Image: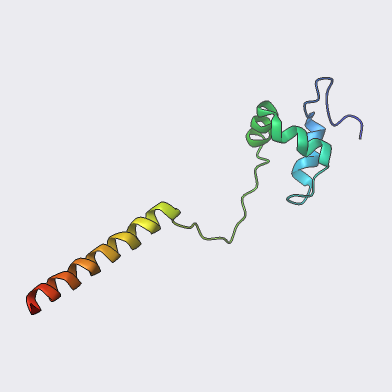
Length: 89
């Protein structure tokens, strides 16, 4: 695939267009391999509007926040149980 990379191996405008047009995860392997390791090409792809966001998916709370809420709830339940047991004694 000639004309998709320049002399240094960086993606040309045409190469970036090929990556943007390809279905997610199915771009040409040599272009994708370079893109993974080249910050300059990643920046150019993002600035050109080539970043695709999967729509229809809800944002999930980070695992840390969820874990903290569950741990806090468990701690409150344990304290309540201890208070009930202390009152019964």
